[in-house]
Length: 264
Image (cartoon, rainbow, N blue to C red):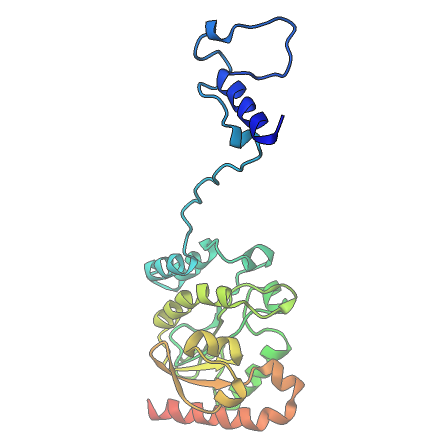
């Protein structure tokens, strides 16, 4: 029997309700009820028996992490509320591998706010930004212009945070998607902390704040970020590896000091 004739015969058998090739006794299918317990009400199409795939189930509605972050950030009425909102944010996979949420350090209401990139090992362990070797260098740099995160006066105090509140594994660079979902929180963080001037430390903070990278080109030039004047600067970790670049970092700090005095 040729293929098409065999296929037509098989289809005819399926439509009659045949479900096995051979039986011990003959069965008159016309005397059976239309549906039997445990059997489908309609016969299985031949196409399905020939291996055709069923249509995939509809995908569930996808959640937009950025939109969700924006909603949660705007609902925060103060810094404590923003910290709680970030802790409740479940769309960033970095959270699952981090020990602590690294929120901020220093005095809220400080005139100067430093925005870094992401926590490292020491920061992840202590839950505070810039506490390792790079943080110690940052403290010395700020002290050189009369600023400190532990200062009692807001005029001389510094408020410090990072774009990413969780440490990336192996200190890898955050992905564009991870940065994007943290930007609404960063925007709200600046609004609530209300500094006069920002320092953007490294490429990630520049990317999140002004949408640009290339810190060697950007440093030393004032920009506007989150509605405030911002100075891009080399990351202290980079200065530890390239100490000859400290001259440029010192020039940038003097620019920040001068801008703060102008705004007094």
